[in-house]
Image 1 (tube, helix red, strand yellow):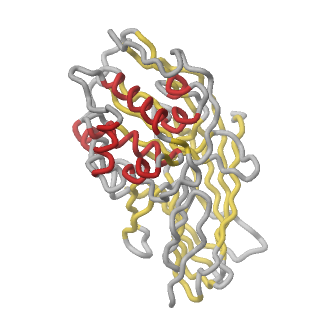
Image 2 (cartoon, helix red, strand yellow):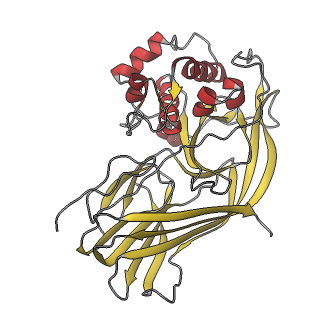
Image 3 (cartoon, one colour):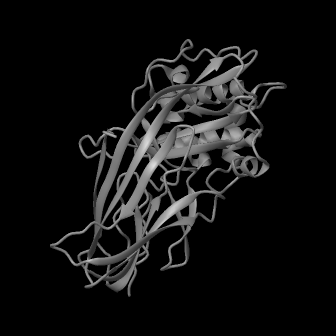
Length: 373
């Protein structure tokens, strides 16, 4: 069967070969947030003890419903991969389901869903749905539902109620590592870091350095969507003079990892309903400050929000659904072995069958409402 390229979609990189199709997306929209506790772009002294303070909570029901369709395809077997929403300081997952809905007007499916381990990041889980249609056809629908309790979090001066332990060694290694997508040793990144004056100062606290990095992003880069370089590697971001939330987050994380501060991208969606067919994709960040814990940050917000760094540093409102941490993913598809995937904010698929996936398309709806229970 010949190979082709599925269409490039908003927020997606180049298309992938037919019959091994992946539809990865990433963050786009910036949501205005309340003003920060500090003067715009003026760093606090960060003297003495600091702590993370819990904020408001919201209990929500989330539903992501979609359909993949390829008019020229007679599918015999589908594999759909979705993020397994994680437990995280910003959220608790109370219920989660991923399934093929019953449609009396369409061929039935025999389908099973299971959790699988991501091969790239230890402990990261994904959902794999394997579905066989009773009659070969061109389409499959899916439903991903969750009941979550979202939590706010804020950084404040003062000692935490209990001592914050250091990261476990395995976690420190995972979120300090240099990777293909987070290459802090790339020549363009090291040159930009030096030009921006971001060499770490003797005795500089993790909080102070992270603030300086956000300030440098705001001063030297722009929010650009679509990004000039869809791969969003840090060296490309600085060469292009900016990127969208995914690229700016990748650069922020890489710069912190480059000086030994564990950091990670937090990939998800704003917890608000669709507006004008915008699926609310966004990518935030967090870094682990010694003695404090995982501190939230929003690199794209620091660049674009009126409140600057003060609005984007150490603040997290209960308005964001975490879908997975970091974005280099390797998953066993069960149909085409282990495959690489990035930005899993919506289910993706691989399929076996006859015909072609040329011209495939997807429709999805993202719904968020206050939970009644």
